[in-house]
Amino acid sequence: MKSYGKFEDLEVWKLSMRLSLAIYELFKECKDYAFRDQIQRACVSVPVNIAEGDERQTNKEAIQFFYIARGSSAEVRTFLYLAIELKYVPKDKSLDMIERYKKVSAMLYRLIETRKKDNEKKQ
Image (cartoon, rainbow, N blue to C red):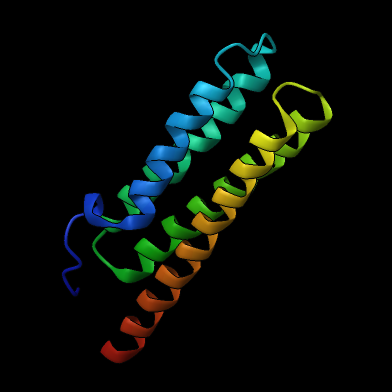
């Protein structure tokens, strides 16, 4: 497998880590503990799966974890839309976070496509 470096060097990992911290901060006062727990689990799943995927033996394995990270990003966005409707956090903050998670998803899509192309070159 081609060496890609360390997951800590991936911009998408760095951004998703910053967003995880921001989600924890945004929902720290939320009294709906089940909701807070779920959004925190989902937000942490993004950088965790990026890291795990990047450390896998093959691009095929890495890609699967990157897809899981994209799914978790969509999950966080869904919780943020719910948070708006439930008035758990200010709408403008939720919408800003949604846009930032859309960027993560786009970055992951490009990473997946790059790894797929690298896989095709090897075959």
